[in-house]
Image (cartoon, rainbow, N blue to C red; front, side, top):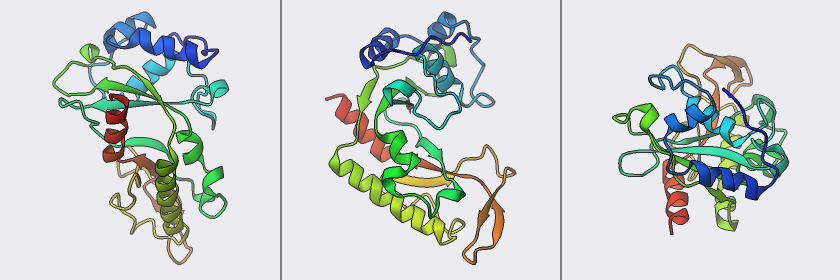
Amino acid sequence: MVRNSAPQSIDDLMQRCHHIAGKSLGQIAQEVGCRVPADLLRNKGWVGQLLESYLGADAGNQAEPDFISLGIELKTLPLNAHGEPKESTYVCTVSLSEYEALTWQESWVKRKLSHVLWLPVEAESSIPLAERYIGAGWLWQPDQIEEEILKADWEELMDRLALGEQSELTAREGQYLQVRPKAAHSRILAKSSDISGETILMNPRGFYLRTTFTKRLLAKACI
């Protein structure tokens, strides 16, 4: 897969977004010399990787926003047949070492969500992967109310995690932000700590944005 050079400005990035809006994943894959997999069962991150390559995301595995010099994070938004978000949006991994070390301002969640390029993509399972279309991307930064709610969610969830309540924490907690297992299957385990401070093994957790929240963002972008 050929990776394009990083965009030099926000205008450059948005021009690339305009170019792919209305095109299929198959067309974009052809442009970057990439084979389209039969499905996403064993290639879950393929759509994101394809779009990162075309748009020139340059962070790789670094702890930086996807477009480092622009400070912009790329998030794909899979849509169902009704044009609504199909699933919650992964933000970042929950790190055991961060439970007591960070404030919201220093958190990786805030950094990831400070400036986001959203790219909606058809994700209805009845549509072959290569024929799924990409929608019009838009830039988003949380307004004051959105950030206050995200901050409150993060602080409450981190407090629960710091108290060793990982096993009691469910995806029902949090208004916009939730914590969920992020492993591909239940056999993947990571070190954590329980309420007594003892080290235990459990499924890795991640922060996710609820579909109710991303649905609101999509509606605002379409106004």
